[in-house]
Image (cartoon, rainbow, N blue to C red; front, side):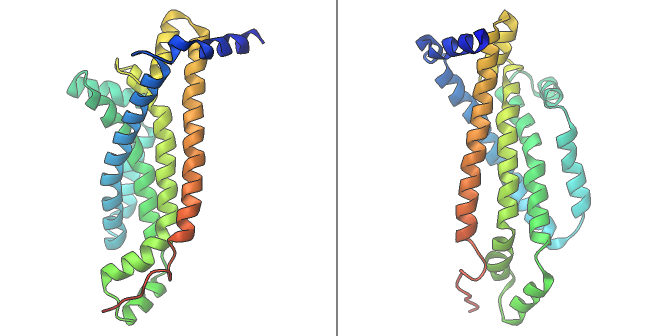
Amino acid sequence: MDVFQSLYGWFVRADHWRGDDGILTRLAEHLGYVSLSIVIASLIALPLGILIANYRQGAQLAIGIFNIGRALPSLGVVILAIMLIGYDPATVILALVVMSIPPILTNTIVGISQVDSSLKNAAAAMGMRRWQTFIQLELPLAFALILAGFRTALVQLIATATIAAYAGFGGLGRFLIDGLGRNDIPQIMAGAVLVSALAIASEWACSNIERRMVKTIRPGQHSMNIN
């Protein structure tokens, strides 16, 4: 019970919310790392996944290579990036991007590849061009799986972005690292609660967005313009 009282006491202190080391500042830093990383990872993984799925060349090899990123320890990637780049925010972003690409890439390839070929043949027989088939048929059918990959990457990113503190930068991980350094148990617990709450909130928000968008983006709801 004393542990929960100490945790509550840590959160209600106004100085823990304000200033350069406050919760709001650390949260903004954390979201900055996550947002930039997920954007870069998506810009790499989505076009690459679409390309591989359409040409079906080396799909399994690409998935296998990029899934190595899931097996790599995030702290090890940061240390390697520091050795190559030095102490720079780019080291953190590089590590987070490497960790984020696999779920987006894999789900994009699988989602588009699993579209029934008979449906694509029917679209071609109707006179639809290749890009029309992709936009009006393949993408809507694969959308749910692609979005699920994005959601997985985002939630993983929120947890993994705590490694920024190991490299001497900000984010919610600072509460964990600084708390360990001072043996401040309430601060360590507060950091863990903040990261967990952010991950849960992101999962809930993404799930709701996914349900709404999947209902909106469906095959057949697009105009079948073949001119």
